Length: 378
Length: 240
Image (tube, each protein chain N blue to C red):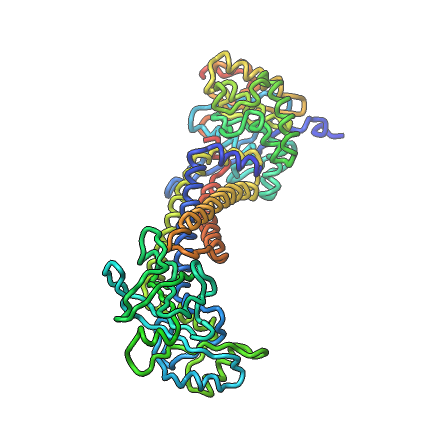
């Protein structure tokens, strides 16, 4: 009977494609929007993800994220180094500055000062040049997304000179980074150099990056540092989560994307529900005849369920494929750099699809179940 | 042995069948205590004006509409004493249906349409299809087996519907206006086929019809007026 059910469905091509479109469009909308949402929000943690070496981040008590921080006295570094379980600790500076480009344009940039000796604080891989270029005078490394913003036309920025708060800076490398939430241009330089680029208050140490000794967990060490120094110390995962939470709490993004996802669901229910109901209505005589002939309600329900399942799965597959195609085709765009589809997103859209199918299938099935077999004689 | 034991078991036996329908606050009695025996091996017509109750009667006789009161036995089984599932299964095993509008599934071919009862019984689809094709051949449309219903003429669609009603060899075949959409020649041909294939010693065919062009083909004609059987004979009464 399932074969008959599938043939009934696929035989009515107009409605079959209508149902597929409804499910696929709804899945695409939900999956694509959730994917963009997750990736955008995760960029709130890019400052942490770009520094792979640090197990623990130490900061002022009021600092919240890598971008929202309050500078500490430079003595904080020595305090941290004195805590048992700290394998190494290096200074890390994050501040904003204005840069004047060769064309005379003004661009807001984030200056990131990394440890002079070890260069801990740099992203793990480079696109152009090597990390050691920072040992040359006035050197800065620019992030790849920043390159596209400041140097249009795909020209290599290496060798370009910038004016940074009246100081000379020369771009000598391009780092492969995860862009920040605002895609602000990031310039990496040595900590000592960064202090010159970002003049200002007495305290300019944003973070102390810490590596744990063998056998000590990040959580344990963070707690110990906090206790011993009075500073805030967080394992990298916690600080990353704080960055994500900050975006969630302080922007309208969750609401906007949430509305779109809900709209996707509603559109799915509307298109699929309407089309499926029409399909059932058009075939109600046939279902009535089957009931009269001796097909049980259970088998009829199985037929409707098979129809709903088939159209749901094909439509869902098409929707997910559409999202993959979208992400793949825009992967070269800096806005979508590093975007991926977390496994939870297709799962969520699958649940949404199942809900749509169950809801619309149930409504359609009610019509079939209500049909008396005797109606075929009327 | 008593006299009643020697009588053949009726295909259908109804006693005191009544049926009421609610229409707003009113209750309308459509059937008034029908007592009827339909014998096997007969082509029985149920004739009457619109609203006379013949559709209700035939629906009750084939187990798809519960009577308000009374008993209905089909080949000795009190069908309304069965559970819902047992009744559905009883219909599947014992009754074949031919509907006025055929109610064929438009997206499957003639053979698959004819095979539906066998598939519903759980038979393998290919085997069911083979038997359906054999039945279509018996009805002289074996060459149309692979065509969709919309590629067939009205007469051919009706034959597919007949094949569907007979393919599982039911003991009772119930037809609702089987010739209404056919011309006189095709109508008579369909009736000949029904008699040839559907009527046997242990089988019975009941036909609801208005079609006076085929009255002469009946073994028995029952006339229903206002929910009562007013005529029971081999011919139509003169005043009809």
